[in-house]
Length: 597
Ligand SMILES: [Zn+2]
Image (cartoon, rainbow, N blue to C red; front, side, top):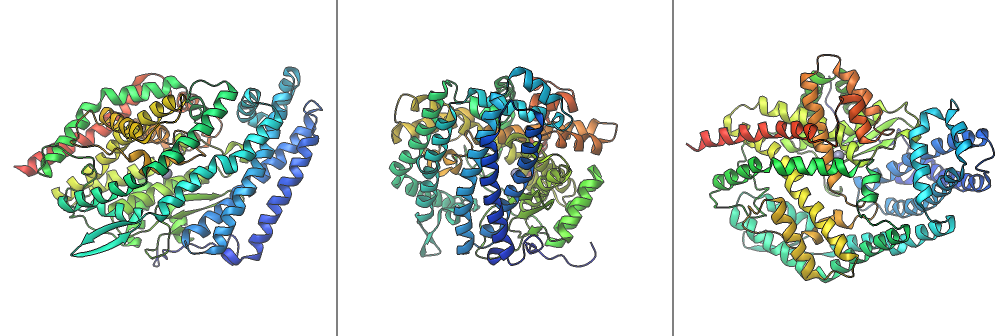
């Protein structure tokens, strides 16, 4: 990379003018018009009227799917880069409406798929144009066959806008209005939840505990409101399940993630078995912080702060270089993304917090959003998002209907990329102290996935069981949360966070039920691939790309069987993956004990 990189993204090559773009306005109108037209055509389609009509519909659906994603991606970029952009906010609301009409249309397509007779179905799947879509069409047909009547489904979808998803919006509004008073250096200021939470990473324990208490108090003050949002959105979901006659609350999330319950159980089982070493890490961390035991607010506390920062250009060069060791194609992709300004990384006010990667499948481009200030964790995030971008990149020529991979495998490429860079950072650390900090950063990810996320899963499962019987009061929610955390952290913390069910957005996201275990799956799945890569003698890049390209058209069990020759319903794969994480824990324990002497 010859000249200095610009840390801001280029959105104008996609649509010139950003939120005031006439081209974009026109594009949105076209998407709306196309949805309306295709809805009409689908309504008139005779499900058993021959294969040709189906081929035409599915082709149009593919184009429309890509264009809708393109539209959504542009809007998320606009609203992320400037939270005060009012036009972008209007587009967000408009997109929600468009999304509702688009899913109403796909529901009709699915119902028609369900109405095809067995005989015609077999003929359809034999058509050359349809063959590549076998998996996705079969999946949609089977799901459609479980659904209620067309009118009931449409009614549920329409009612969900204000009766279900609205609870998630309500949650966001309440959280957005919350203010937390924090005294620092003799001065008290009001902070948003996000700003206050950032102050939890202070190395000063007394201040950290004080910030935690202030934040907890704010959640407690609002707990009755959040008890309502959570109970009502869960009530809506369960009511729907009741009409479908689904008893198992995991049915929907498992199907969305195309995985078996045996796989989920094998994964948690392996994690539970390996927890003792991670508990040892927690104890060692407590000792480094001069504590008998960690409290929940110490788990993510920094142990040191001596880590070198890298400029954006240095960070970029480091990532590209590390990627190259695993896959030249991935390195070239990253280099292109930096040079063509596919990344918004500038550290400035008015940007949304957090990071994401979004795809423009019609333009075959991606955009990455984050705020870069030079820390190792920024570099890890950047690598993570580039991993997402690379995943989309290798899928560019895959049929648009086969690009819909589930969340559990969505995190595979990203975590894999992040791991390459994090590993390299540890290896290249200049001092033992720096190495320890970087190792700690890696291990803390395992703690998050094996303990924090496990607690979320345990809580949610128990909460939904109890919610089936009626409203769950806030005292009980607090109790369930602490019970789940105790189990997940092996009863090894001195204090737990009873209001975590209120503070964690994920419990309130309506679009994705059980927004937790897919994270852990993705993390371990990519660890397993990483282990595989290190032992693999052939062309790993080719193997890896083939696996990524299949993520939207196989179940996870099939994906692992085909590309890695492993059975995910058995503990072996998971245990191997966890052992990779344990190596970091061992290294951390040894090094920190050595430094303590
Ligand atoms: Zn990600």
